[in-house]
Image (cartoon, rainbow, N blue to C red):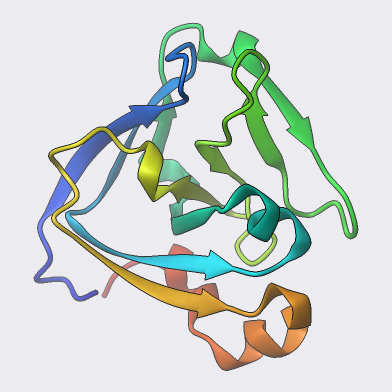
Length: 139
């Protein structure tokens, strides 16, 4: 993703629509498909950006709950009603937000490049990928 990628406001949320948010991000994103125990069970594939680009809408906060495990760095946030994790705080970028790309409303994502993240071997994958740069300011 370069600076030539158009930035847009994406809107999205959970299945029951009680959790709604908007995020400023490129129209073309790199999404990470992780094979850690949590992501693989949920089938989650997500793109990561600075948390300052994310805004929870309305009264969505009252429908959210959080699950953590292991290092407790990742905050797996999901809807209390329908159970969907439309966004969460990733271990790789605790200063950022991970958006489940399938939870973005249709029409604003024009291209998704999927990269694999070996969450079963988290430390070596963190070192060998550029995932840490996802929340760094664009230059």
